[in-house]
Length: 282
Image (tube, rainbow, N blue to C red; front, side):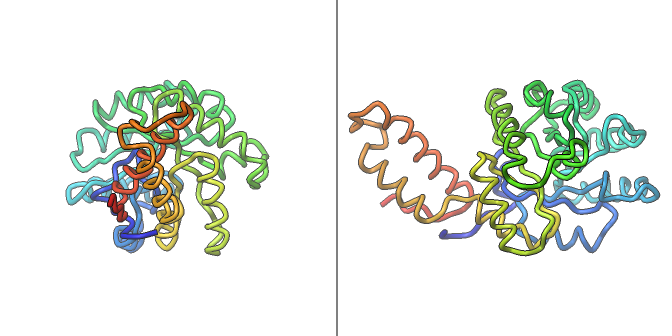
């Protein structure tokens, strides 16, 4: 891979690769997150914030939004904290979007979007069998920009193991639901193991399943996620070679099957540029 891996100021949410969750009550953790390579930092008012600290953490989030944009994970619609979260965040100019915990029905997302106001992007976390069953309808809610896989809570809800094969059906359903709704590809769940080799293996599964983002729990994971989910130098070279052979306008296409290949190559180079990678068009 060549060139930088981009940054929060240049990567739109539809393309963001690393989504770093940080407890909203942890000032040191937030500072480390902001200094990381994360494409998106998510201030976590849900699981990352203990019950006794939720009110003060919510106040801290509101203050932080005044100094720059951030995503915020809010509590599930079924909790008493959800109303406080949406009331506090409504109309805040620094709110980049919300990640909605435990999204089980499209109504959960509709209610949240309505309370936050027009134009606030929502990333629903699919964390249960009920959420997966409704994934197509959830993805179709206008405010939704991407789905995210709450892997660990999903496993607790269903009893499914953590292996790639065991979760392949779930990941593929989220990818298909996103595609049918016209959303960007979904965000995969986090890797709990700190071993870089485990992260690399897990992120390879993410990419192979057609997911283009991944949740992270540690700042040190973000650069590797960005690298693994960005076009590599070999992919860029092959895409350039194909475009040169077929013509950027497709004028040298002789086989109908080459047209989708050309489109994929052009899309790959476009994304490489979005990520700040060096793409020498010659």
